[in-house]
Image 1 (cartoon, helix red, strand yellow):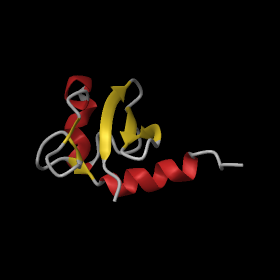
Image 2 (cartoon, helix red, strand yellow; image 1 turned 45 degrees about the vertical axis):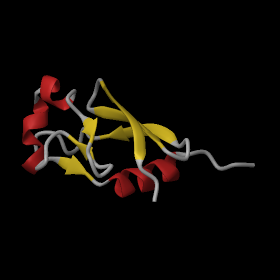
Image 3 (spheres, one colour; image 1 turned 180 degrees about the horizontal axis):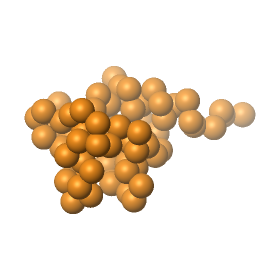
Length: 83
C-alpha cells in the first residue's frame, strides 16, 4: 500500500501529493469544499493546514481526513501511460 510522503496545498483547493513510489499529482478538492465535514476548509488558512497523519492519511484534524488510497487511485488514472 502506497502512502503519501509529501503534500502541499495549492490555490483553487488543490493538493499536490507525492507517494512513496514516486507518483505525484494534483488532487482537486474544489467540489468538496464547503460541504459536509469539509465545510471548515472554505477558510483557506484552514485548508493550508493539511498534513500527513500518523497513519498516512491526508488530514486537517482527526475528524477531517481523506483516505490516501482514494487519492492514489485518482492520480493513477490521471498519470500518463508508460510507453
